[in-house]
Length: 237
Image 1 (cartoon, rainbow, N blue to C red):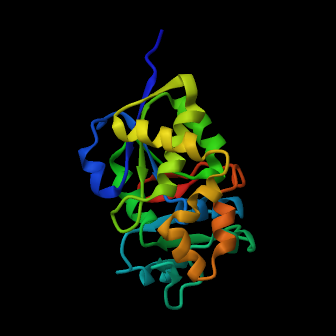
Image 2 (cartoon, rainbow, N blue to C red; image 1 turned 90 degrees about the vertical axis):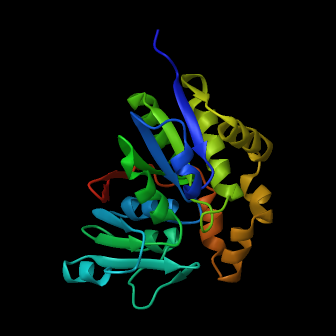
């Protein structure tokens, strides 16, 4: 009988270095509002590849190499970038053949922070079933890396982590207090996670930017059943 996979939760990128699962694991980067939801949406719309970048420095060089630029800071699209961080925007476009150079306030930071794992993937409610099938099939221990907001904790990413742990069910065991807390929080909120998160600071921030449609979309399950995988600095499916 094989051991169950252990699932640990890092509540922010600042805590990722203190995790106890450090080898032979999968890291799932989670930024529900909006980066990992948007990445799933871009691939669902046909995107070929996404290069996550944690800074804006040098991003224009990718345009010279034929990449479209997607950039966001503080919830707003940056400068003359073709795209921002809106999943519903990506789904309105035919992205077939498009390669994105993509930099966001929180999500791409987490994707790159987790790149030391044996496998690094992007997770959200949008791809939760496909993601859990991948985790279950691979059988590795997993670290669920919540992006939070500027290195701090946020409720909505923690809910996604808790939902993943519940979905994995008997194939996994929560490892550590953060994982136990994430699961408990999800069990409180799961009947109406969108309603529960009306108290969240980033929800209110995005409402102030007119992005309520994106917020509502992010809380829908399995809208984009793809699993973006980071390899050699590039996300593909």
